[in-house]
Length: 345
Ligand code: SF4
Ligand code: SF4
Image (cartoon, rainbow, N blue to C red; front, side, top):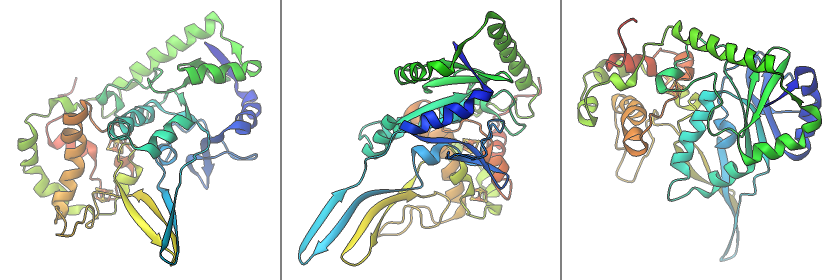
C-alpha cells in the first residue's frame, strides 16, 4: 500500500491529464459532479455523493453510433466510436458496485461494443466512503463503504492529510508505477489508523436511519410481488419526470434515434426512462399504458427481474432517488411497503 499527500494532488491531476481525460468531483455553483478537470477547477474530494453518478461518463447520456451521408442514390455509413482513454478519480464504493451491475447487462452476450470500448478505455479510482449520509443504505445490498470495492483499478482512503492508495488491477499497478515519484510508502501507524477508520465506519453504519432495510426479507415471487396491492396506492403521486432514473447509477435503458439533417445525419443512442409514457412505444402501441404499470416496472426490474437474470439486486442503496424524487416515491419506500425491513435491533 502507498499514499499520496493531499498537497501533492495538484501535481497529480496535470500528470494524469497528459494521457487521460480526467474526471473528478468538481463543484460548480455548489453542485458537485464528476466533470472534466482543467487547471483552476474546484476539486471537491470531501463530497462523497455526487449529484449524478459516474454512470454519465461510462454510459454517456448521448452517444453517436454512426454518421451517414447521402449522395444521389448512394448512402455512406461511417461507424462512430474511438473513445479516448479516461480516468475517473474518487468513485464511491456503491457507485463502483453499480458499474459492476451495468457490466453484467452490457458485457453479457450480445456484447454492447460501444460500452465495452468505453470500459476498456477507462480507469476507475475508488474512494472509500468514510462518512455515509443518512439517505445511504448500501449495506442493505451487502456493500461495505469502507472496503476497497471489487471492480476498481485503484482504491483510496482519505486519512486527513493524505490518501492511502492501493492498486487493485493490472491497469492500477501500471498507473501506480507511473506516479511512483509522487507516492510514498505507508507506515505501520498509518495502516493501523486505517483499520481504526474501517471499524469506525462499521459503527457509523449501525446508527444510520435506514440500516434495517433488507430486500431479502421481501416475501413472494415474481407473480405475488407483481400483483401486490401496494402499487395501487404508491404510483398516484408520481409525476413521470424520470428524475429517479436519470440520477440512478444502475438504470440503463436507452433509445435509438436518427438525426436527419437532409442528406447527412447520425444515429445515436440516448438515455430513456421507463417512467415516460412513450417508453418502448411500438407500432401496436405501448405495453405499459398507465403510470401504475410504469412505476411498478421500475421497482420490479430492480428487485425481481434483474435478480432473476443476474443474481443481484439492481440497486446499490446510494439514496439518490430518495434525495431527488420530488414526491418521495423511492426505493426505500417500496422496500418498506413490500416488507423488506427488519424490526428495530
Ligand atoms: S418516482 Fe419520483 S422521480 Fe421518479 S418519475 Fe415519479 S415523481 Fe419523478
Ligand atoms: S434505485 Fe435509488 S437507491 Fe437504488 S441505486 Fe438507484 S438511485 Fe440509488
